[in-house]
Length: 395
Image (cartoon, rainbow, N blue to C red; front, side):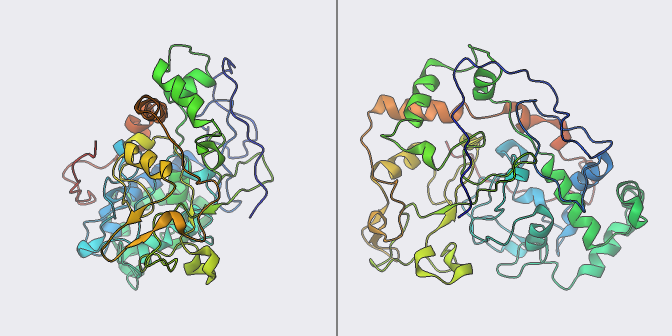
């Protein structure tokens, strides 16, 4: 476990200037669209940011031709109006293949040193892009063995040859895995979400930005009785974080008592958590702590999308874990030997539950959900357009 950041809870009433950040910027021609109180995410030495690269990455992100059957793009699992999640319990790939996990949000993903629910090796956006493109367990976009076909598709499009040349002049505009993954990484790294009512209240000094219920909920969130903030801490509300200005990287995985099949400590097949990569029993059920920014629009919740609403999430933590009395998952999650010691349960009144939900809703950044810079650039009738059969919104 890496050294934990000393990121303190923001002080009420502290007004900080909200102006574009300019310090520590070595990426000429690119300006981070973010407030001065937040350091930019780290940028790999071999993938400096540029306007051209980010725009190319946006086109690739929304292009279904990156999939085997031409129906699935990155956007199929990461939709802007849902903070780049998809509203499904488990995402759906090519040929209707179900993913192993719930799609995580991409808001502020550049700050995250662990980019999947449980794989500690997926620590850069460029490397992680290979998983949905070419992974086979399960298949998502289904391009394994079809690399040359992918390059040919992009080369044949009117947009891409010039766009790759503008984004990667040092590589003579090559269309290959190096440039594709780095353009996708640059676009995702540009996804900054820090304009929620909470941000405007805490950092911008807008005393009217949060409701009274949300302010009461904030007090509960940071109260030792509920223990929310011990895992969901700091500016990103997660104990996984890295920035361009800090030498420290925090990576944390926790078992939150979702399963304990047969009282043996087992989790469902294919969703064992960190143990799938370490082989250690003590890592069964250990998953990365997600950020709570925009959490109100990213239902359903947990690594497997098995909890539908924020109220049910709070109820889960109130009892300290989940119980299945019968069926294939029968067992008492609260008794899992790996369960975090912070999950001790609590009692809350109906008003307190409503206030906690109001606080979590105050973390929604409506600007981010509608920002044109992150939206689909392709015309409605373009072959790049992915087919999106979205589920109904979970309320």
